[in-house]
Image (cartoon, rainbow, N blue to C red):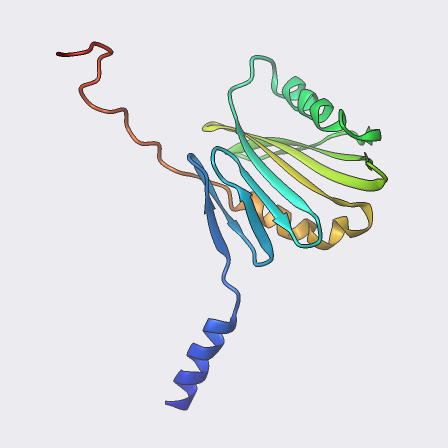
Length: 168
């Protein structure tokens, strides 16, 4: 009886991950990450000042490499003295991704950003992990675990009987 009580007490004390949903996808956020927004995209923030955004993008009109490079340019625009490393390419049977590491200044603070564009048959996702230069590696594995937990939600079917005509 005592061992059952200890097991239950221990289970209650272990921090449970938080399931965070947008309209079309969900992720698992570890303890310590707070949700800033979860409408169409998911934006998490950590108490250290790190942030993680996961954005579901529309299908690009240009090729995947060009799409990813435009995303890098968009992220670099507000940074001072920004530069990026050559992309790393990942590919498996279900998805392809490009990952860039970006460094620059946001006001007077050195920032480091990991930008990854994931192309799946079901859509394109952008993952943007940002932290201070000196704390970047501390939460990197958690940010990668969040991104790998990405799961699509089934979209509701269109309402029946709506043909675009109004009835009186």
